[in-house]
Image (cartoon, rainbow, N blue to C red):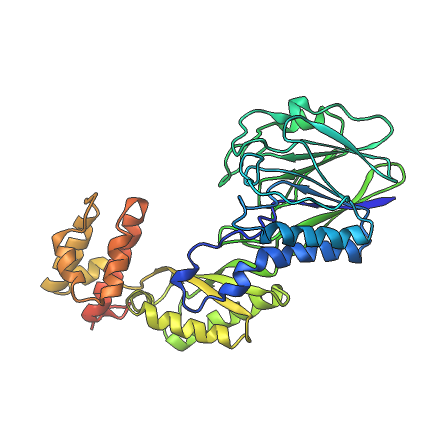
Length: 418
């Protein structure tokens, strides 16, 4: 029996965009997260006495700014070398041969597969043959699997490949191939990289995306880590076990405000939701995007008093403990309890406002003059946010926000005017 770790897409020292917009962001922890997650991978291999490690591409996020990135990786490989644990890795689109200009010698326990042709490598002391090829260039449009050899008889065959497979949302199409292409090689396990969401494609044979080691933004929510694979003496995969490595956990936290009429009730619900999410994160920093939903009398206030609501939510985050929760952004998707038709019939002024807002739905470029006049009374930062979002598919949502703010300012408070 032997065991190995399948990891992918560490993206060491990947820059996290947008942090400068948040004065309260734990920048040091977030920017160091990819290194700490990789250290967790190495420690897991040591603690579990793993026989070997495979990394399916994008070890680096791009060319090194300096040699610090390479020295960090090398130091981690020395830790594994001291325990006799070999590492096998391929280059992906982010660290393709044409991308990385700086290089360092690596310890003898590390094998980097060729980027020019498919290569097969036998693992010492184990009946294992690993087949792999790295990316020569950032864009690889051809099916690399076609050049992989068929399975070596009497051995556990592992395919190491960086690929989009048959395509996944949010990922560029690189080294595309089909599941049948992989099956046709006769390998027992395909260790795939490039797709950051962990996914088991097949169990016979095993075709697995390990996902990335550390989520880097709100589009990469949930646990991130690697797969621990156990192979029995018959050279069959006995178990594939998920292990988390991330040190920062990104989550989209939905808070339903249906029926909430007071600010204290809304904040209570948010605080309770944060507490549950923090417990599930098991001591990791929780990076949250809060999404308020539901029909509530607070709809207008949420839009109009955004800065105050954010401050109150940051206070709720503080209640969870130091370095426990960080709020990346707050999104409002609530609906008001007022009836727009009834409001339009209330008085002439409200009718003009409602009609102007409805007419604005027909605009395709700039804010209508009538809306410009109404927004002039709003705080500058709120006005700028609305104007910036008046593009593309966000127009309808922005109009809803504007309507909520203005009607609330007229005295509706999210409910029927008095």
